[in-house]
Length: 413
Image (tube, rainbow, N blue to C red; front, side, top):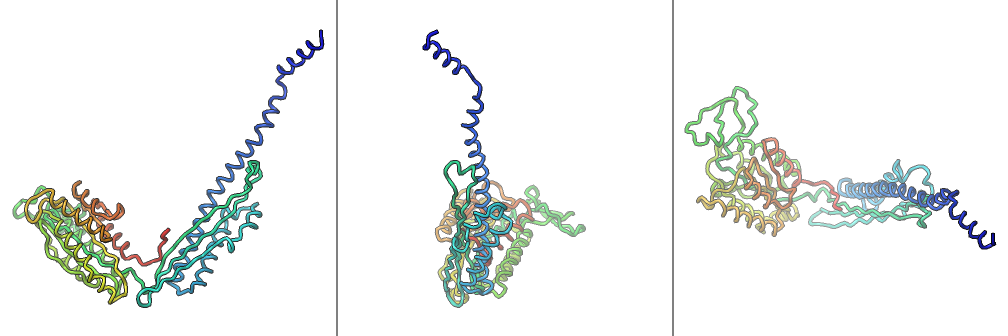
């Protein structure tokens, strides 16, 4: 056999030989597998630390804002409080404080990595507002496997802002109630009167036209009675926030197939509550919300409201309309019309939106068209409430009262 043939035979055997292939594949793939595993571990850790970092800046900003408004702390003291909160959050049991992370601990000096800025604004009178910004960063050292890809670490950032005001700077508001007292408000809810022996006229859509409707038991609570209870829950929230009647002004108007009597905005809630409680136990008439809503808009939009608030509390008021119905519009200016009132009411709702007047809308056991109108009028989706029973109505009014009377520091970003 010639040398050329021997070489060809040897090369052929080598090419056919599969021994050692697994070792070669392992040598090629194993580093990639290690790197992939390292990346998975570090990604999980990044997500956890990022969340902890955001929670820490949130807590620090809120703590500082609260101390400025409620405890009379100076700006320097508030910054110290914010730093303590941040360090406490990041060095107590979290992922950033896990065992084996000494290199990270050595490289993450929160004092130098954190910027705390406090903006203090002097308002009318003795009141002040504060804005606290907290920004920090954290350097995560990758594990040796991830470093096989050439990256040794990454920096994560977090930022939070909180606002607060001194006790003198309460949330000054003007609120007008626009309430339905059409005939359907006489109808019963599904709530029974606690007095089991009590009898009453249980009005429904099927017996509404029955003359001298007899009293029966059990006695169900009517929609109008439920509304009065709901308004009382709203009033309680506002009174709690403003016991001295220095920051809250309320008024009210009601409607059936036309706009009914109006009570002007006045300090506190007593005048508006008295008005609501005086509504007839058995309301009558169709439904036309256009005139009443336009009236409420006119009252809260009046420039004199701002002057009245400034003269007493030094505040520019936030302005609200609470719009409620249990039905759908059937009239316009006293005449039967199924569309005009909706059109005009929506125009007024848009005018309120343009004037930065916030509208809360409550549909109480209302049909679809009534719901659609109130959804269109509510300033945002969260300002719309759909109450299908008395308990839900009371809850909606209480929530609206709580929101509008809010005085505590709030996280804004």
